[in-house]
Length: 189
Image (cartoon, rainbow, N blue to C red; front, side, top):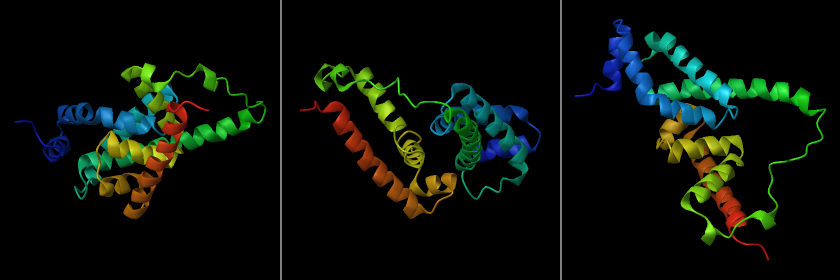
């Protein structure tokens, strides 16, 4: 029978590093996904994921078990990702003052295909790009809700916001995503 997260935490605290490796394997994809939604650069994502697990390992003696281990770990990852994103933004702010702001990634509407000609993979890729276009606080809660399947309460713990704020952000994210999907997939006049 597989060990629970609580069992693995106890084993880690008793000196079994293999137990932590199981926790990393079990929750690595969730941490990666949560970090990726905040930190966009692939190298930064990798670094922040590693930093998150190192921080969690070091903080393990302080883990009280009041929240699920996964929620606690995602909170650590969320905070690390926000910190990295803020660092990047400060560096980018200086750099972009010299840029002219051209957006080379935007496709003209005439290059879009009608949705009946799109494969499921193309639709998923476009939907992923639309989710990327959401403001960060909406994108994060949406990903935690749909992809990581966290409850409102768990998301509130991860992002450090009241549960009603999380609910509002998810609702607004759905509305905004619906608007973006309509603009993307419905041919223009």
